[in-house]
Length: 158
Figure 1 (cartoon, one colour):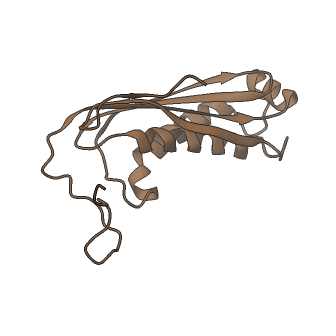
Figure 2: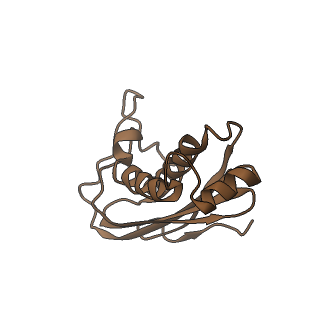
């Protein structure tokens, strides 16, 4: 059994020291969705939400969240991100969200990509909650990652 890397000799949480690792190119792609009514989807698509351009604000929220992931998730390291991009696809009953995060660093960017998707979905909820309260955020997941000691990962198609 592998030792627990985030636990110290007293059994308490610790942040792993990555100082001795060589920087490499890292990339992660995450996705998720927010399920909503056809009326809410149409209003997002047509720019008829009172709070403004929902996807533009969600885009900025996702980028900001990726940059600040280390402040939200206790064991994450602050990373020098080199790129963050979010894409949205509005269907009749959802907004599909994909985030891609890149860095040249000593640890992966999976958490940053997942955090970007989550914050974008939460922002969509916040901007549309006056229209609909029963929206559901779901299926937030890692799609792929590359770089680092653990190698590449690609999720099975669902």
